[in-house]
Image (tube, rainbow, N blue to C red; front, top):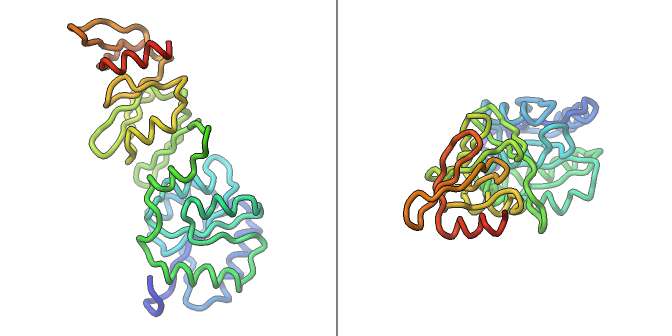
Length: 249
């Protein structure tokens, strides 16, 4: 989106009606802006972004189930994001995860206009990739407690203790949980760095295992082993993976 190329198409995401109405009112004072959707939660936001492909999202940080940072990870570089929140302690983190701007409630029309001007100057496709967002969000010592996975307009939220193992699949990783495999565009190195090393171990270049699912390890051939999970699933174990597994157990 560049100056003069048409109205800026915007989505508002906030679980509180007064906050949404205040943004609607502020937007109404700004020319060349079209409000295409209002969303009351993160799930609706991901669906709306997929369906309407807006030019910008005004996104609240504090929301139940999926917060603003979860939404930003899920939509990735698809659309520029402006965070809107009542908590100024999120300002630095907002810019760390490559939001276009950060607005503190209550938002003045003048400040909102400035933020939308930044969107116009920046254009679509200039936002961070999902991998950059994830890397910026993780702080030293943080471990992943849940995985959020986008499947078109649908979003899955999976506690990590429900993940049996993670498998590399080309440009994706597959999270095996409840008999299903959910794919996410991410590298194994990113997943390994985010998961708790006391619970998950890299047993093979293509597999990260939740050690709570392990039943036993069997010798398959000379210097070759296989992990047998509690449900009978068999996963290959490399020599270095076996050493890591021994150290953990």
